[in-house]
Image (tube, rainbow, N blue to C red; front, side, top):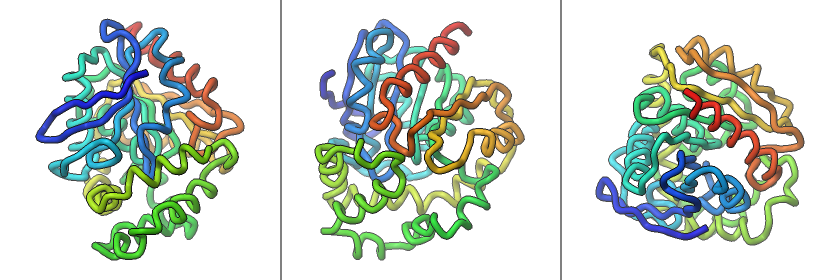
Length: 283
């Protein structure tokens, strides 16, 4: 596993890479408030058969520069382009939380550029059960983070404590999230530009929802992957994805895992993603 920097779209993008660029690629995308290090337990395992790239999303961690927009369609375009510049081919995008929203946008809007998408532990804006999820009082932070400027004012200087709250709430096994990873997450958002970029993902959700609510046929293979720690199942999400136009979507459960599957169940996560990627290559 090696750290790299890619210059693309007037941005500097930090990533962890492993494997041979001649092999099919797997592009790993983190969520909020994580960074590329959330994938370090699985990168080398996946790299035995794939060219693996785990990005810091624009402005986060080792990435610098403000993207054209925080809308997930734009971020998908940027990250696919950066992966292509790094030599990725026949790529599968895999992400959780916001990273899963970006992976979905990759399949929906750039299906001709990727072989498949793994959407993990997230709800897609504008697609059932979006309205039900965002109305859940436990998801209060979606509305708070969308407020201009106020989240930055209150969270700046308190990133570690604030992020630990969400890590402990979302993890099925919070003990699996090490001190090293928790510190890396906080450090990745310590710059004001990074903190704002993370909240901007929420500020763009309304625009994401408006786009995604327009049905569009999606022929790109898609896997909806979800840990079972919160009691929700892929079956709660598959009907909405199919109604939105996903023609080749399947679901899979990762047992004994919450939001952070690469850290909580790295072996099961690697097996699920690699198996799906193999199916995509058979196309």
